[in-house]
Amino acid sequence: MTAMTQAPAGELDTSYEGLPLSAAADFNRDGFVHLSGVLSPETIAQYEPTITSEVIRLNTQHLPLAERDTYGKAFLQVTNLWRENETVKKLVFSRRLAGIAAQLLGVHAVRLYHDQALYKEPGGGITPWHADQYYWPLSSDRCLTIWLPLQETPLDMGPLAFARGSHNFSYGRDVPISDESEARLKQAVAERNFEDVVEPFVLGDASFHRGWTFHHAGPNRGTVPRRVITVIYMDADIRVTEPTNEHQVSDRNWMPGTEVGQVPNTPLNPVLHDSRSA
Image: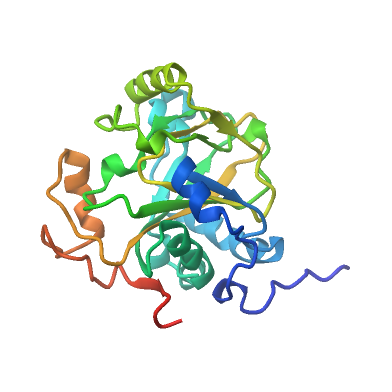
């Protein structure tokens, strides 16, 4: 019997050495970056079974795929796994991941907004075009999402794809993820000639995208779930703004007790990286 290779000791809390010198500039220009070797395959193998078991335990979507709407067919969604499991918390609170986020955003420190697992089942449908920040009552665009697949993700499994440069385009910021956003934003991306960047993800790859970057994913034509954990980071000095839609009202729950105009300095929004104390 071959022993399982152990994850490198302390990898989650060590600096990522693979960040290109141009990464922050590329991120600012394109609205996203796709990085290789963010975590080792051994580290991902260490955490994937726990994340998957928690998704199965906490999932509340039990309708057959054929009976769901477009959003329901896109993925199983479970949020704030770190509050449910100490092992998952170690990954979500990784100083390596938060450090990359801070460097890309050009800020000295980042807070946690929340995490969410997005599992696209075999036969699962498209993830419609959308921008995440539609949902966030935050005072600036200094926030991003890491998209970390927990297996190799070839094109037929529906990897996340981005409209290059679309974070500077204000059209379409008033629509939630839906059939409407798919139709409107797909047309807008084509008309504005934004490049639709669709790439496979090798195990250990991760992408980071800005809150206003339009993105989408294809269906999962594979035979196993497309398993992904995401973490949303925000500038540690960001403030809560007056919600502009019902979804932003609901998202205030991720920052309990924080009033409009205040920094969300709550136990659910800890600072995960601060270069001033590194």
